Amino acid sequence: MSIPSRPTRSAFTLIELLVVIAIIAVLIGLLLPAVQKVREAAARTKCANNLKQIGLAVHNYHDANRFLPPTYVRQDWPTWAVFILPYIEQGSAYAGWNTQLRYYDQANKGVPGDPTTVVVPLYLCPARPRDVNLSVDNGGTDKDVPSAFTGQPHRPGGVGDYAACHGTDVATLDGNGALTIGVALAMVQPDGSAWTNLSGAFQSPLGTRITSWKSQTNLDSITDGTSNTIMIGEKYVRPGMRWGKNEDRSIYNGQFARVFRRAAGVPTKDTTLLPFPIAADLSEDFGAATGTSQPSFQKFGSWHSGVCLFVFGDGSVRSLSNTIDNITLGRLAERGDGMPTAGTY
Image (cartoon, rainbow, N blue to C red; front, side, top):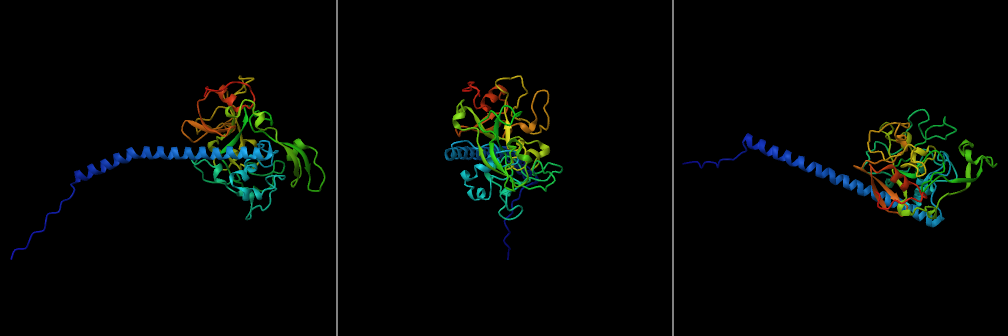
């Protein structure tokens, strides 16, 4: 009796297999850039939404208080990133803060309910890679400690990727941007006596409270028009200070202005001064002025390709080219220079 033969089984030859692998490799090579572009576009959209919500929060703060939040009350005290917390659905986080006290003097240090360790996703750009979300002790005074009491242990705090626009000059505390430092009106030491050196608030004993202060700006003070004035944008951080060090420490702490504010362009009254261009090179790492530019840690800058995102005084979010000229950038940074900007960027 004959046994039926089994049907022959087809198989790939080695050459066919290599061809298939090569085709797959080509397809992957074609798809990867597209996938990367989609991811970049998604990150840019999310970052723009972050800034939009921050801008709306600043406007809601203004509606409730009739003035704009200060960049910080005084050195060591809370920053704008604390004051707008109730307006970005972070009321419970804000409830843990006593804004009369220094950042360092806040309650619940190192235990549940510690307000400084709250990380707000809205303050983080998704395009920026991060190893840490809290500031770190980088040795010496590069840590979150009171300015006049640097021997204290580091108090970690939530970081952030955005900074208020101080204007075009950082030589003075009173900037010419939309947001600027607050003015302390009254202070009380822990023993109940008044601290009268209001401009030297950082020298007061730990536990001293700023019981009365005022903001220096409101929407009416932006005389160039809110649609022509930068309010908050993406901040540049030098490679050696990523992440959680120096200018990338806690966004809540008013100890060092380089953490929560930036300058842009050149002053309209003296365009011969060294400018604050947008940092276009992510490897830029100089900590002092060069012959052509101000220090890197004072600049805005972004991880988005070719542009930096800003929210303007009217709440609109716009991307500015990294190559925007410094005169135009300066006009956008100042709140009342009286110079035209429409159609120039």
